[in-house]
Length: 114
Length: 115
Image 1 (spheres, rainbow over the protein chains, first blue to last red):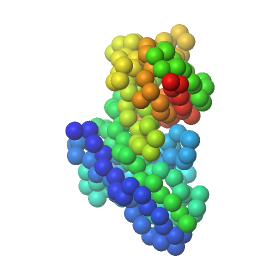
Image 2: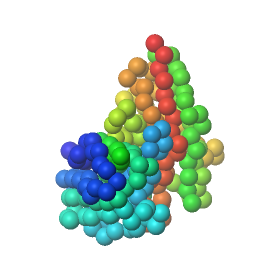
Image 3: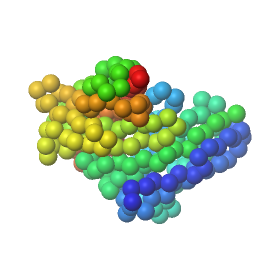
Image 4: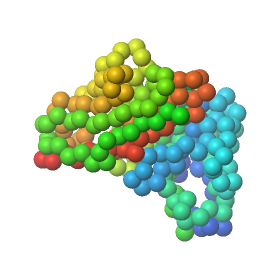
């Protein structure tokens, strides 16, 4: 089973709302990722968790807050987002951060900020 | 920093024709290279990867890619295109230094299959 599950599939939120994106994998992977993908662009790395420890991407605004409750779950908390944050948010996982490991992606969560 | 360049943002081929999607990498050491496919409104699916075990890599759906160090290339090919191959294709590189922070993607190539 090489499945990364993301919920919700679609989310519409106002700029003052607080919402969360959720991600789950049961492959025993110890590295998990959040990517952001704008239309017709490649995915851009936002955050990496390795053994439930965060590697911070300095260019990600603080209105995005990741959380890794355990080795199978990854959340992305959203607060005071801007319309330009509307995008596809992809969760992914791999056995470890070592470069040769395959990164498996979920189907993504489509976020629209109004 | 390692990077990949995909030549051609759009490639159009006829059904049954050869598919060739180009990817060149920039790295001071042999990299780990990946090809992913993204169908409309879906996530990314791994087609194949190069990790130095063999220069010719076979993947899913009849795709293969050849790692050529002399040309710093990792082009993706498929002998006979099918309508279902229409999608966005991304070449990606991963750090070999052990401190990998995910993948760095090329800009993508949109593959169009003409009937």
